[in-house]
Structure formats: C-alpha cells, structure tokens
Length: 391
Image 1 (cartoon, helix red, strand yellow):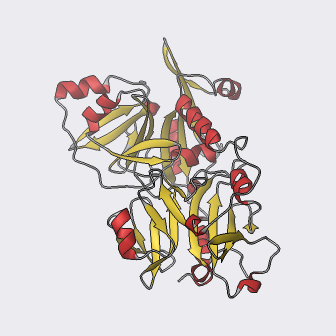
Image 2: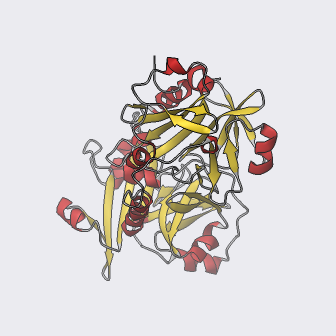
Image 3: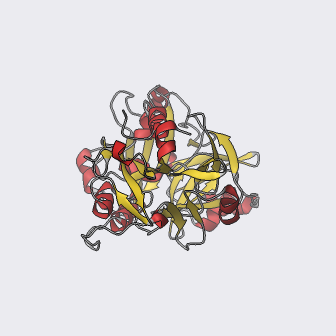
C-alpha cells in the first residue's frame, strides 16, 4: 500500500516528465505561475513610451518584446516601476512567502525596490523578437548562439560603464555570482525539446530571494521541544488571522471568510473549489482537503495555524517542528496525526495505521524541491478518507 495519499500520487504523476517543473531551486523561486486576468491598461503617450523604452539594461538578449494594445513595447531589467507602468499599464499584485510579484496578462514581473528585477514572459513575449516560450529548443539555441546539445540553459551578462557584455568563461561566471550589475537569462526546456519558460533576472535580486528564504528557515531560533498540537492545527491561516481554511468547516463558512470560489474538475477527477490562494475539497458540504501550491496565484500567504509552516518551508524545519515524517521518499513527505480529545498526536513511522481504525486520522502531505534545500512547493491537509480514497 502506498504511504501517501492517492490524490497526491496523481499530482506527482502529472508532474513527471516535464523538465521545466523539476527545475532547481533558483528556477523554483522564479517560475511562479500561469496566466491570470489583469486590470485595465494605461496607454502611454508616444513621448512617454519612447522615454520609458530608453531606460534599463540595454542588450538584445535582456530585452523582452511584449504586445500591448496593438503595439509592441520593450521591457528591460532596471526600468523603474513607473516606466514599466507607462508601457504595460497596471498589473495585479501577488505574493509568495519570499517575494511580491505582478502579473500582466500572462507575463510575470518583480521589482527590487523601484527597479524591474525579474521578467518571465508568456508565449506572446520574446527576447528581442526571437526566443519565446513554445518554440523548438534547437531553433532557440541557434538564436542564442549556443549548441542545443551543450547542456547550457543560462546566459550571464555583466553591465559596467562601457556597456553590457556576456560572460562566457565559467570562472568569470563563478566570480560574478555575488556581484551587482550581473543579469541572467534562464531558459527552461521540457522533455519534448520545447522552450517551456524564459526568465530574465538580476543576480542581486535572486541572491536576496535566497537570503530571505534561508532566513525563513533558520533553525537556531526554534525550540528543540516539539510543539503541542491541537485541532486548531488542522487549518491554514493568513498572516492577519482573518482568513482561515479549516478541515470540517462548511462551504458557507469558508465562503464567508475566504470570498467567492470557482468550482473546477481536477485532473484526478474530483471537484475542488478555488479561492484566492487556496483550494478546498468538500464532502457532504464540509472541507475534507485543503491545498496550497506555488503554482497557485495568491494575493495572500497561508501558513499552518501556528504560523510555523508555509510554502518554501524547508524539510529540515519541518522535522525540527514535527519530528520525523511518517513517510519520505525524497520529494514527497508527510505526517499523520490522530485526534485525542482536543489534541493531535503524531503517528510515528513505525506505528501501524491499522491500530487507529476507530480514531480520526489526518494527513499533512508535501512535495519538496529535488535539491539539498528541499523546500515545500505543495501542501495538502486532508482527512483519512480523502487520503486513501481520493473522495
């Protein structure tokens, strides 16, 4: 018998085979989602557009051409937020635990202070009118000036008073990792040999994301004693505590605190309700499973009720908080708890589940990145029935 939920196995199988979804940590932190409905755009004057497009880091492979209102604008790293707004109009704000980002139609952008620090175009955007998501990698590699079978997926650039130059020497790239004014082009390629993502970012911005993520997962300040868990922990809350998704709550209660939802049929065959940043499966009108995911765009950040665990929490921090997981196969890990009065008791990895047939048992299951950091990218909180019957 599988030790992790049927629904979770379905999600994992759906993700296998796509190299772009198995990116290393730096891409996991930068590749943040798919298209969302944007707010109305503001049309700049011809003078304003020309002025905005002249700003930023000027290099063809660091310039995104993007269609806006029957014209094509040019976006460059280093532009001010005001300049970007003049070109593309207003974008909707989203966040994950380590960053705030904005979506304009299918394009993702993020800022370091007031300056554009990351651009992830969709298939309508391209680098200097050439490389774009959806094209054959061999064609894209030719446009980038590299061999398709070289294994190279990142190009590095450094800006100085004389202009922007590409760094080709591995030693020069290594030396530039902590420098300012260094910019990176990452290309994701899927198993079919098609470009799945194009990402431009400031290396300094990426380093700050890494530092913030590491700070979130500091172990030094955590008590060595495991926290006392209660039924309150069977929920996810926003930082302000106003919005709470809890197992057992009715749909009417959830709608009241989470807002409107959209029902959709998941790839696994079940019907879930999508709220802002969280999905809930209802059985007989009550929440039986709650899901959050890095790929799910959210204007809010959800954490476990005690505030300890969120997306991008490390497996090491999870173990410090909850002890050894009930199952862990490297990328899928999870905890089982059973209810004893108002308390939740963690089930040990060597304790048989069959002994708890008369108890209320709950799962906290997670997918983590496939690297040394092992950061949570997907979290599922559910009851025993959902875990083993997917219903």
